[in-house]
Length: 81
Image 1 (cartoon, rainbow, N blue to C red):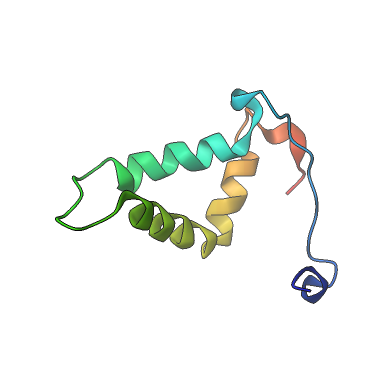
Image 2: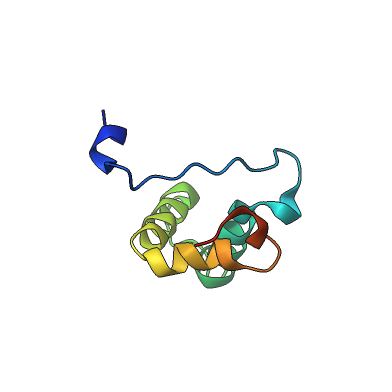
């Protein structure tokens, strides 16, 4: 199981289900739209899903950027990161 390999490095945070202004995933989508997805038209044959996946992979590879979404004043209530 992949979770077992995290050996105590995983912390669960329960987020509101229907409160976008309190949910850090909205900050991720906003960042994605501002920095990649909406900044240039799709190339011929390029799929939007592929571009979004690539951008989300880039974000995941940058732990400090991920932490910044949780430090945003609007969602700081969920974490002490």
